[in-house]
Amino acid sequence: MQKALETLEKIFFSDLIGGLDLYTIVASVLKFIFVIIVLYFVVTIVRMIYLDIRQTVRSTAAANTYIKLINRRDQFDFPVREIYYVDDGTTIGRGKGNSIVVNDPRLSKQHARFILSEGRFYLEDLNSTNGTRLNEIPVDQPTEIRNRDIISLGLLEFMFINRGEQ
Image 1 (cartoon, rainbow, N blue to C red):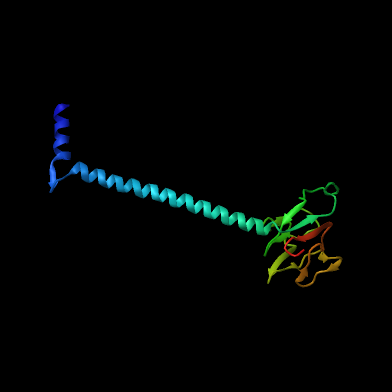
Image 2 (cartoon, one colour):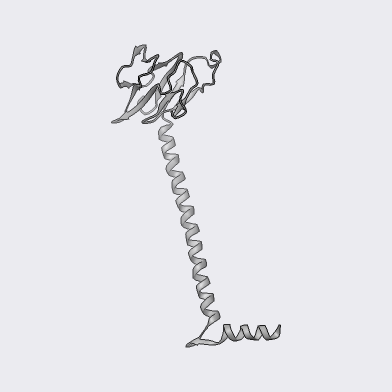
């Protein structure tokens, strides 16, 4: 055991270049690796904080526009939420590929879409079987929606709320 320690001491503490020994070189390299790992960790945390803040800002903006169910929920034999948030491209229908999925048998798989253009929302019927109505008027082309308009899809009636419009 003593002989092994003496051999390691000769390897690590013998002068290689000038006054540098292997121990000093290895220790310096490990210090640099440690600093790089710590910096990578800090950059990752800062990036996560940035993404979280950015998502919060987006969520706040999206939270200003939603549709609110005005029917009584207990009159339906399928689950439906009271509020659905909408944004550009939000689709509603029975199909699982929609942003808002409601299992109302009177809805088409892809029933309607919300479009945001130049700060205004539009409602578009996606050739649904039972149609989409805005304030009791059938929607046959993208139609501008205003705050507190009533959207009818099947038996569901929603009020469009856009807090940014007032």
